[in-house]
Length: 340
Image 1 (cartoon, rainbow, N blue to C red):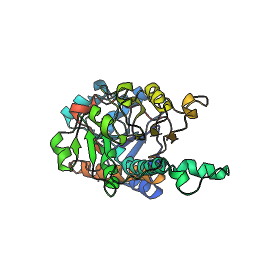
Image 2 (image 1 turned 120 degrees about the vertical axis):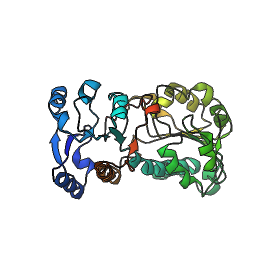
Image 3 (image 1 turned 90 degrees about the horizontal axis):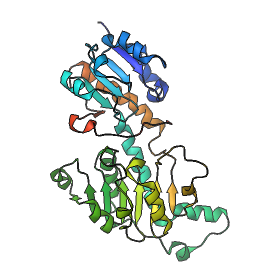
Image 4 (image 1 turned 90 degrees about the vertical axis):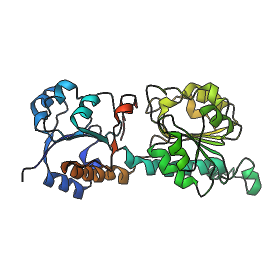
């Protein structure tokens, strides 16, 4: 039986990052692969795209190229962000699936978000460093500003993959979960047992706010000083998705007041400059864009890619990767990753 051809163009990912040795053998045995060069990609695709059943990567694919792709069944974005470099309308018209591996990161991000929440509430990280410096406080003295996660009023900005991995971890502590997501119908949110509220209500009333939304052309700097100034003292603000959703200058000003606690895994520019003033803020728990970066998560990319390639090869719908939706994909504006 003739093997389907896969163009391999995963940069900034690498094949050994995405596939375990065993899964890479499966890929190579079931498909014929062609590796795209790092330079002169336009010419490469002009010469080879007509052969491909799958493109594994996120190259620039305009209509001029896609018209030549008569055998193409799917574009598999392994960077995990749908970018504005593909003629999505043409793909949808011709039945070319456009999918991304982003679901592999949702559980790792959700788990570290819970860990950061507990550390902020109980001051775990600072108590550790106090002990190292022989400045530890014992008993109640060390917990004067601490509180429980139990019965807290939660706000989720965004109700996509990240939120749907996080909320099950929160339910043992609290059922008071409130959601803002203009892309998700209120009926669906209510089916989960949660309340759909606007951002003003959320920032005014919720005690822990998680930012879990993808960046779009409509929500850049959505969370600004007007919203941040509504946060109640001793509340938590936890940013786990994309920095562009938050106006970081306004966040720094709000944090400097010293009455709220912040955790962030993402920043407007990465790596963060050594002299960036944000490093001096005492009530922020920092994570260097590492929440989803687990070897198991990257290898899971290969697992779900192979599963969906097998389904698509049988003219079935992909079930494991995230599927681009025509109504929303052109609005997505996430910044491509710079570091794996």
